[in-house]
Image 1: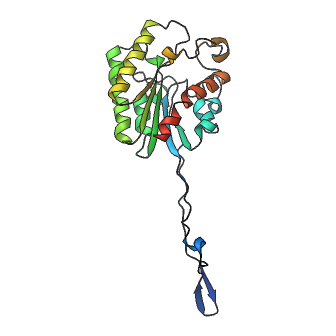
Image 2: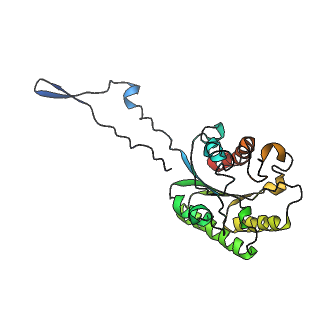
Length: 230
């Protein structure tokens, strides 16, 4: 999924006339001294997450990271989706990957933003293990991409009053993000999804519908603008 802009080459222009090679010269005037325009490279964004970010229940093309690539909120961004179904900070998912292995596989020195999103998949694991794995993943992202902004989005609750175990994970992730120097976004405190579960969550009562993916795009995408401008 890695996309690299092509190398740009600026060869000189030589024209042969008979036996004499003539170098084309720029005309005199301000145009001759105008600097060459250079395209601003896109900001590389790596999304680390679980099935909320893969499009599970809809399609990969409808996942919010994929939608971000064509949405105005994603202008100037190169979005790479590292998310894997079933994964968490501790729990391994597809390909036996965790949020930590996603960081290792996708975050590079030129990464500008790393977004961590989730994960309720760590329910049942000791809170200290979750906190330790989360901090290790966030710190590692900072080591691999020292200039990157770290944005940590906690797991959403579909109930107005969240499960205590999910609330505990949310609190430990907030602490880890603060220790890692990241920005924390709290879907539980902001009431994401819980007011419109019927439209935003699919028949399995777990994964977003297409409307739900657009909802995540809007809410997570709104936090990327400040990260790009800073």
